[in-house]
Image 1 (cartoon, rainbow, N blue to C red):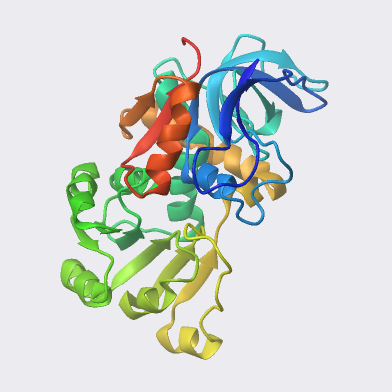
Image 2: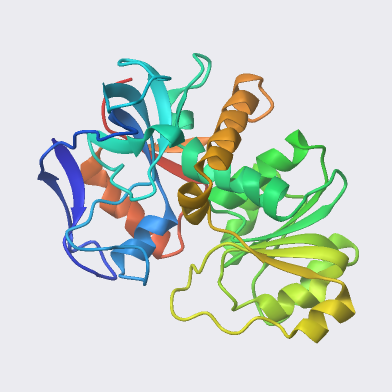
Length: 330
C-alpha cells in the first residue's frame, strides 16, 4: 500500500515522501480501514520536527484521524462489519496511508448524511474541540470563550460548536493581522492579534474578562491567560504548538487568589486511558453534523503526494481552517 512516510526529524518537507509499505493486519480488538480521507493536523508537523513524545521511532507515518470503510476485523471485534463506513482515531498515528490500523474501541460508524471528508475531520479535531469545551472547560451557555490560534482547525471547530452547545461570546487570537478575516468568517465575534498589548485587546473585545481560555501554546501565554480570566474562570492548556520545554505553571496562591482553574488536556492520552470517553464524543460530533447543528468547512487536498506542502503551510503559520486529504474515492 502507499503511505506518507517521514524518514527523520526535519523543519521542512525534505524528509517526507510517499512510499510503498506493507499493509497492516488487525490484532485482537483492532480493525483495518480502507481510507478514503484522512485529517491533516498540526500535530503531524510537531512529529515531523521531532518534538518529544510524538514519534516512537523512524521511519514514521503520521495521521491521527481517518474516514473510510472497514477492511478487516481483528479477533473479538463484534460491533463493526466489513465494508461499513467508519471514522477512527489512531492513537499511534498511521492514518496518512491507503490502509490504517485502528482500535475498534475508537472506530465508530459514520451516518449516511455525513460526507467522508467531514468524517475525517471528526476523530481528532472535532472531538478535541468538543471535549475541550464540555469536559475540560465545563463550558456553559453564555460563557465568553477566548481561543488562541483561532484560525486553525481546532479554533474553527470551537467557533462552530459554541453555538451548538447553547451559545456564548467568542474571542479569537491569531498570529498575524491577515488571519483576522478567516477567524471572523468561521464564527468569532471578535479577533485580535497576538502582540505585546494582547491582554488589553482581549479585555476590550470581550467587554471585560473571559470565562474560558483554550490555549494550545504550551505555557508561553499563561500569564496573559490569567490576566484576562474572570473569577471562577477555566484555562485549558491542550498543546505545545511552539515546541520546546514547557515552563512552570502559576503558583497555587495566584490561582486561589483569582479563583481560577488551570487544566491540561490531551485527547491522545485520553484515547489510551479512557477510549470510551473519546468514542462517545466522536459519536456526538457526528450526530451534530447529521442533525445540521454542526457544519465545518474543510479544505480537501487532492493526494498523499500533495500533503507535505500542506504540512509546510501549517508549519509556516499560513494555514487556515481544517485540511483533509483524499486518499481514495468514497
